[in-house]
Length: 443
Image 1: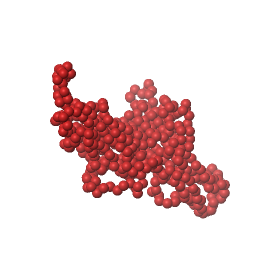
Image 2: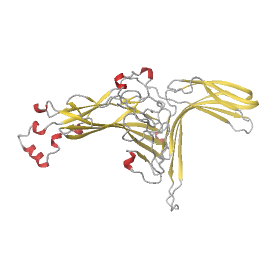
Image 3: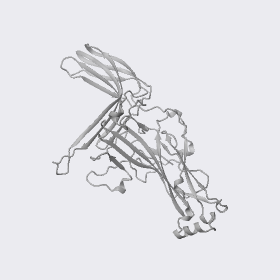
């Protein structure tokens, strides 16, 4: 029986580390009798690993199948090391202490000419612990302790390691998200002109009797939304409409909110290799996290209308903040579609914006949920993922806008992991979702 090498970390084993946190503990070595040891060291490192496969096309494969070539790139975000023991003889059981600290920034720098313009080369804040499956490969960011024991003679080295979950620290803590305003000038709506013929429109332009009363309202929608949000925070979402064609007859006119649909899209990029010719995998997934129809709620011009109650990202270990590191990028899009009515006429307002998911705020700093919001929650059963058949072409209407793409052809296989991206969701699951990285509730 060989030596028993273990790493014992002080404190809670389920602890999630943040920037500047210390990692302390002991390395324990147990042997039977005596053991000739050359060296014992412990390393503290962060790694970013991307793998993928691509078919190799040769003229001799007439059956349509091609061998696959594997690509992998492994980058160290940082690497610290401590020597615990020099050459000596160890008896029975001994232990040695270690002490490390999570750095604020990554360590290495990379040349723009060697890695290309899209490769993040300069030191930057540490990304979160992350793992997701890509087309034909994986993208993994991990932080770990690794103890290495070198033994005398021709005996192989002995290694053991312990993973350390890491989550970024928010730079500036804002308990309430900042609301941004976006006026959708490109989506001006003239509801009373929708049913008019081309001849009627031409005559009305030539006629001097054309007035605001004949034209009806000229409606410009405005969306009020957050550009960044942290898990646990309520996502404020409002709409307002302005009538720029004012008249006395229209002073008491109102629009009617008919429907609201909110989707969040996840974009994950994974690069392998150092030149522009090496493969890059891109994965895009969409989820419908809010869908309300037949609302029939009137609201006047110039007033903001709240579109959702208790709409938030749930604070759990699966919610991955937006990040960009050397070879892996994760970002999110916020897609809103709002149905409006005016005197029986319908209109769709559509807006897509970049949504930054921030690192989670400590629970003790988050405001408590009001009692009236708690009563509006009506959770539905948890979402269970569905995978398309690998033998037959999928029915695209049944996939609910699931998209996947890569830089070249290859087998597209997706499996579920603790850090995977957003996945498609049936339209019946509207109030509470739990999936790969996010769980969203709405009232």
